[in-house]
Length: 507
Ligand SMILES: Nc1ncnc2c1ncn2[C@@H]1O[C@H](COP(=O)(O)OP(=O)(O)OP(=O)(O)O)[C@@H](O)[C@H]1O
Ligand SMILES: [Mg+2]
Image (cartoon, rainbow, N blue to C red; front, side, top):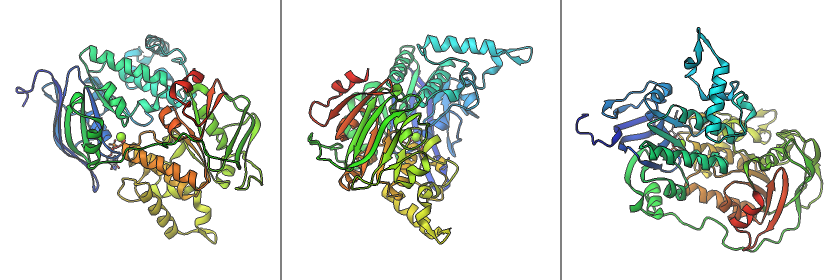
């Protein structure tokens, strides 16, 4: 080997295969990565993208095949070793560790450099952490903070900092941008540009094809664990990409085409003078059959709105109430149990922590909120449980072996489908969806949008919280723009509800 490698090839993978039990995650994948290249890696949920990158960083071992870094045989034993050899990754799900500080997370497995006389010098570590945070322009996070004090987006930034700190030759970014705030995204893109300028390599996984076109020079397409094609971004269209990913043509037409608002009258849910830690004086009314979009920057409080409605955070003042289909029988929601009992379903942006029990099976996750109506007498019927789990995982097209598989072993997008399946199974009437299509591939994304439209037709009430303005505009009857914990502006569906108009009230 070795000698015939092109000078610009940094990494070469040869005939990599990986099975998880009966699942063929990767079949004979061969690829070369070049210096100064930003390589997109795309494919449907479960097509093997994360698995490939986990093998590149020593998290998993390939069953067959080998890898060469420069022209040396490359067999990283684990993440830390890969990082030392120059291959760093920002993982798809939460990669920070609770109970540690920000700087301890940044310097994970690198603590030794701060050792004096056998002890880790925390002060030195914190100073180094502070320095690197400031250099990257992250001014709202302190090195000494506990990681739990940070919100989801901020934690993701810390992972980026950790990956960059080791000065990687190859940086792998696994479906990270949708987990970031706008500001975080800008930082990530700047980092990527900077790496390219320094002739480093970036492997960039995203389901957002517009983003792939903007960021990448080349793109590799995986389908069912098979490497279908690698090409320059200039030589492929978005439609061709989709077709190669899915293996067939897929319908466009994601969103509602009409800009007419629906005629809605009957009250489903109301927030009355609501105050939480971040929210101030929120008065809002959601009607049956309405899709209410909530737009804003990450720290606008929009995320807390979903959590408050589902009873996950402390309400300081005011209330959340729900009504029956006639707009009567007002009930106040004070906690999650009451929310579930009153048919509220909640999809959290932080799916690993708030939406799924990772170490339970897919089945247990799906049936959890529905246990009451699966009971025969006082016992839950295993047969009914299985039937329910099978039905809704099938409806959501979850790629899995069977519903006994643990949730933690699902690919990112398939986890999201399980979360949706569970509220579907529970026949939730009010759905609070925080970034419902995060990490979902193009095909499933359109089926989620048509599902939301279907729910609307059935008269369900939907709150959709999202940073993705096109989906907010594409789906909502009405949009509330949040800023600094308050409602800053209301838009009723019309052609004036544009990205530009919304942004003006977000910032
Ligand atoms: N630890 C594991 N145990 C069992 N199966 C696994 C494990 N990790 C991945 N898989 C399976 O391997 C296949 C490929 O998963 P992978 O996570 O690589 O997909 P992906 O392309 O990253 O998808 P997504 O876009 O949803 O993140 C999936 O069918 C997944 O369920
Ligand atoms: Mg993945």
